[in-house]
Length: 127
Image 1 (cartoon, rainbow, N blue to C red):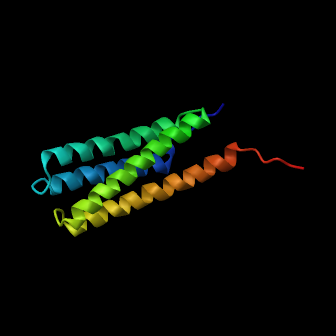
Image 2 (tube, rainbow, N blue to C red):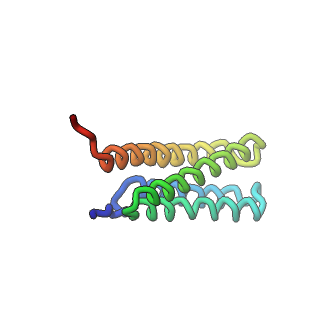
Image 3 (cartoon, rainbow, N blue to C red):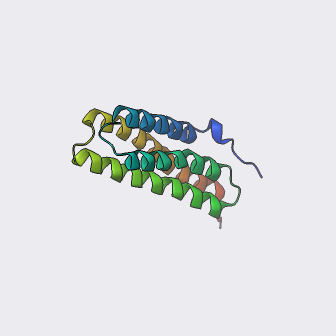
């Protein structure tokens, strides 16, 4: 069975870009965030590309979807945390916009990838 090279897929590359953007975000807002928040955000964002790579490289479809859903759950959780920090005015609006940009790309690519693997790996039943 053919397994895709996760390094070539834009989903993985964009998740790394998102990871780097979050690291820049933490550096730019070091004074506004507590050390616990910084650590929590770093741990969350570091797990996203790992879960995506593990999902893409998996041949078992049930495990593939589970790993990709883990990454998607982390993205949603991180988005809620960033939104809360923006609402409390603890971080700059411009930094939140940059994260939203990368986050949106990763979510769209993930949804596209879910559709692609569902379409390509479920054979159509012909009459």
